[in-house]
Length: 202
Image (cartoon, rainbow, N blue to C red; front, side, top):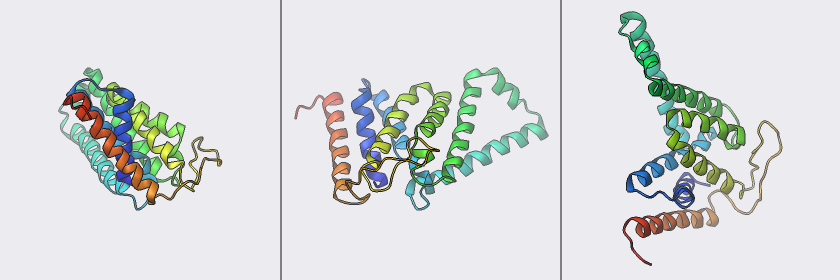
């Protein structure tokens, strides 16, 4: 499926499954879902999600290396500050793990590691380290991505590194069903927001 379809279905799935109560919570969930619903496709060489995430990964690596260099040459106490703040230390650990998982995902075939249960566990653990509140929306969004990819003809290696996978062969990645799912995601998200936050009755 296309990136916009994964994003719309991912956001709708997160809102429907997790039922955020406050506007703040809903916005947070939508933000996490937007990432989680496309992160699986960083293993596609021409995907929009990979092109964008490659820049993010490079920027974060540059920032981390720059931080280490500054600490090494100027001894400003950055490492001690991180060690004294467990939350900050855990967050950076999650970022580093997330980068490592993404790099691994880029180097694996499409619909293999990043579309598997082991891949979800790795991304999920990195997400938990960054923000425990983001774990549930991340996993729901990734699950929605994997499930709708199973509708296509190319198998999803859900138990990677095993070679076997699931492909129901019901549609093409950019066909009519893809468009229908995109529209469903938009309508479902709109319905949830209007019903729960604007009290609009359809």
